[in-house]
Length: 194
Image (tube, rainbow, N blue to C red; front, top):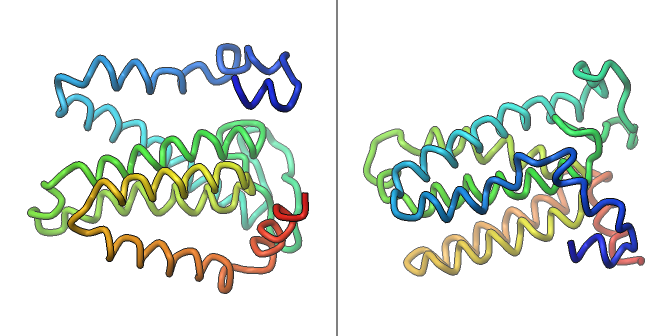
């Protein structure tokens, strides 16, 4: 709502109800399931898992430039393309990916079970990695910022591993800027030119 007011597009206020109503279920789901953490983890895990499938599709879109679902080409950015995943616009898509990525990260951070079960890290990585890559290549810079702030908040809540996690975030950010490619560096650089 605040974003719609700032960009002076009141017509978009109804978009969550007309187009992306299922995303509105995250809040009520959290409140209803607060007394039953097992149900909450399963529901969030299902949502993040479905998002990861769409994330893999978006990564494929990024390199091929083909949107099979809608039968059209995608916006080119050099030798790669801007993925839209299951939605029609990379900004909306980036915002939903931010929510799903944070949900998957919270699922991992809040579960001690992953620390005890041998091989238990495979499933969390299977959710987080494609969501992170799809968010990175959605070119939605506001969602990048939201995901970064959210991940830092999750890291701060995990006091025992704060130093390692912050170090990992720093390394990931450095790799993002230096290694990933010119298109990402261009997007980050132009973000500070406004």
